[in-house]
Image (tube, rainbow, N blue to C red; front, side):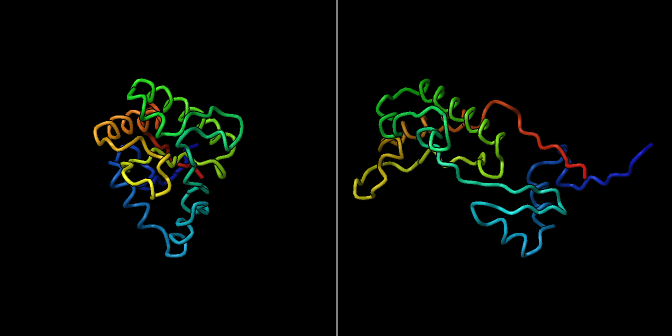
Length: 163
């Protein structure tokens, strides 16, 4: 028996991501777009969009979510000047974030609030522990390796929902 399931452009992994995103956004109503603005985003069931939480703090690990590895604050990690170490730390944080996401995707999102790329030049800012330091080359290098590893080495694909 053959089914005629329409695949919308945003569900087609063969299309460029820019085209897929534009198509999906064009299908949201104003009310649905508003529901997607908060940190805990509502589902848009008619399009197969599940609820999502963005903004999981991960600057020095995600142990605040439960049992996970905790690392020194980024300002301390920057003092190591060690991209290979930051690669390993970023990989661990990314792996643990995906475990928490699999356990409860509506509460534990994969959009990680880290690393902070700002250069720390003014201690009065008050959040100087969240970045790697004031050297732009070092900050760029450590940010690149850690965020690449947060993301993981799995190729980006999104499979269409079949409802």
